Length: 473
Ligand code: NAP
Image (cartoon, rainbow, N blue to C red; front, top):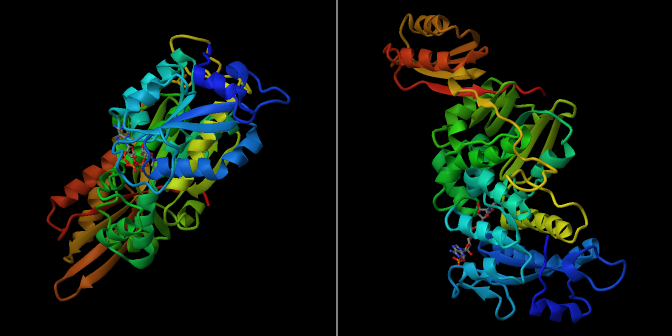
């Protein structure tokens, strides 16, 4: 990698504690502390926390790593906004283009979010030789492959630990800690907002709307929460996890997604009565030659460790063929936990810049490939073919033969019943509820049976279908 020393950097080289290592090569045994220069695009929730963490822990980072991280430029949209954090004069700009083009910067941190113009800035920064650290899961889930190729072409790093499960270093686990494994399954609670909402619904019996309003009051859900509650945000993160785990390029349309906004207190009560907890799970499963990718509300055994993950916490369980089950827990979002993950990437990139460990080459048309990102090519199993157990709830007119219609229709679709419970809701009005837990069955068959039952005029309200994941406790 060629490094140019600019006039301002040569000045820095003369300053005792703020000097860059000449040519950013290996740090001398003694002598000036190398400086890695940073630009930041976006100083909102996470960006502000990154600046704060750099200000508070910059000295500690220098003690630990022997590298001084120096924030030189920060781009925002509205210069006049009050930010509650002081920056030296001349650092703040409303021209992100100027940050990505600044030749004195080694690394750009993208924390503006969204796809456009963030993608353009990330590409420009890498093309001009800067490594990029980002927390932007929407961008990575959509353009990850192209961005990684661009990083490979430019010989720079693109790091994104903060984009999945906040402070949990799950991407490093997949890339490094479990690198020797064939990954079989990933099961994650990877959206803190929805886990907070589901925790309130489960523990306080709140409606979805009331729990969402509380999440918004606590600053845990955005004014427009649709990306979170629809499951889309978790799907973005699952695409990144599955790409790393299986070496495949994941398109969003490959992932089956169902959100939490239709869940009711009855769903939680029903799950509990059969010994389950209800969580929004993101799941990736490899069964050669196919993979399964899905995000949906799921019943899991109440005694499983994932059931104990409350509020805005995240957890990811990874099963490798050698490691077997491993689980990682931490805060999945929030400015400071996310900033912690962002700066861990910054430190790793800074160390590679200084030649302290080999530059990690991403798969791309040019350059040596020390570590390939995409090595696999797998078919994605269609949701209709997925086999799981189901919790079904049928609000029925309590008439003779109603339960017979349910069991015969399910039976015709080869859905066998593991547990059936019938209760009377209102004896005078002859209304009842039938709850069923099935054995393993193909989604296509279960959905067809439920649709057929819906046409049989024994129901007084639509049936409920929730999937069960029988995790080993
Ligand atoms: P945010 O609070 O909305 O901040 C966005 C920042 O980007 C603001 O400072 C805004 O400037 C700036 N910006 C927007 N357009 C710009 C432009 N064209 N040029 C320069 N600056 C621009 O967002 P956030 O919550 O910090 O999230 C940032 C990223 O982190 C997103 O990709 C998000 O998905 C990801 N993330 C967030 C969390 C979390 O807990 N919030 C967790 C994990 C990952 P102004 O301030 O002037 O408006």
